[in-house]
Length: 405
Image 1: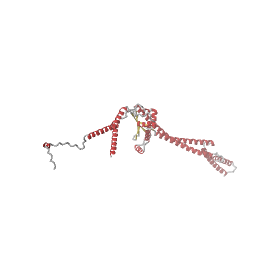
Image 2: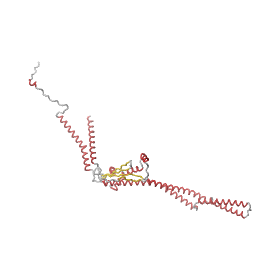
Image 3: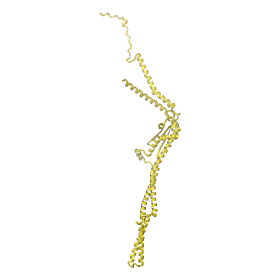
């Protein structure tokens, strides 16, 4: 049998039981709470280190550089256009020409822009104004200046960052910008570039004029040589045949023979008339016979003068030689006159198409530095640092997430 339960005293039975508060679900207890706080502090320290490394440090370096180290740079502006003295087409035709392709002045302007940015421009600036030496000045900050041991190719790459030439397709003008470490040098370099560009345009214009007239001048020389040769042939024929102009001589001989033949026919008619009522030995008949014989001899002589097979230097041979020479001289004379007219037209056309540089704005002399943009550059460094930090944080988080899977 079970022993009877021990009877509790009344005081113990009547005392209320003490209730302990239940712990909240998920709340850390003791060591777990301390460990969570330590993890949070470690994460905060790592975050601050990353922010300091990727944001504060680059921004501080940029602030120190642009605030105390970066050298002042001055920029000079110049604007010009390449113009032509030839007549310009109307607006509608010019618009169609612009749609179909660049006009002549636009092509010249593009050529000048390429020349401004060329190695030849750098070589001339260095030769006449020590352009490269100016940017190697050790007094300037190391990041802005050109290295002392820089090659010409390095200098040309550096030149591309200090000199710019922008072409405006609407106005066909060119805007040149030059940056230097002092205002006077920037103005000097910009003025030199403008002068060299004008010389280049003048050279192009002179070459175009020479090219336009060179062919015409060559044709004139050829025609002149041909004419001189034709005249020389005629002089040689005159000396050979002893006749200044066999053509005129032949015409005169033909005219004289025609007149003699007419007189001969008339004399024969008179002789027949006299024989009709006079004897053969009548004085009038004998006189008429003598006249007929004399005229016949003269006609025969003039005929032999025109055509005489026994004399190779006769008038007919002279006429044949002179006729070919005269035709050649006539053609040579006309060819020479045509070539001279063509040359005059080419010269006039070349003069109308003269090109020149029209200066819109002379190189400016800056009164204060325009580069670097210090506040803007510091803000850009800050924004870029934040972007780099954000991107790197996302990349690290993605890598860790993939490592846990």
